[in-house]
Length: 194
Image (cartoon, rainbow, N blue to C red; front, top):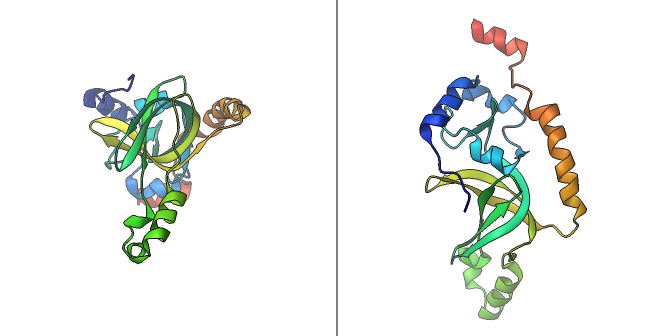
C-alpha cells in the first residue's frame, strides 16, 4: 500500500521548526482533546516526536485523535480485529476496528449459552467491503513503525452528499482553526515569565 514509513530525521526537523507550548498547557488548546478532521496526507506527514510520545502535531497544535472519511481499498481480517486501508484521495492509512465482544466480559460468561449466542449475534462488529465509503474517528497510534487509527467510532456512509460536505468543510476548518497558531493567553504568558 501507499503508506508512509516514518523517517525520524525529517520529523525531528519538523519538530524543531514548530513552536510547541509546554505539555502542561496543551489542555488549553481546544484541538488537543477533540478529533481533528484532517486529510490523510496531513496525518501521515504530522510530526510524531513531539515532547510527549503518542502525541502528533499539526502546525503547532498537538493532537491524538483524528476524524477521517474515505473509501476502503484493503481489508485484513484477524481474530481480534479487522484492519481496513482507507483512502481519501490524498493518501492511505490503516484503521483498526477491534472485536470487543461482550462475551469477553467475565460476568456475561455466566449467562446461559443461548443468551451468549444471541448477544454475540447482536454485538458483532459491522463488516465493510472493498469500495465502501466509511467515516472513522479514533486515536492515532504508531504500530510497527506505521501510523494507524484505532477506531472508537466507525460507520458506513450511505449518502454520497456526505463526502461533498466533508470536501467543502475541510478547507474552511483549516483556514478558520487549524492553520492559526496555538498561543497561550496573555495572563498565562505573564505568569510563565515570572
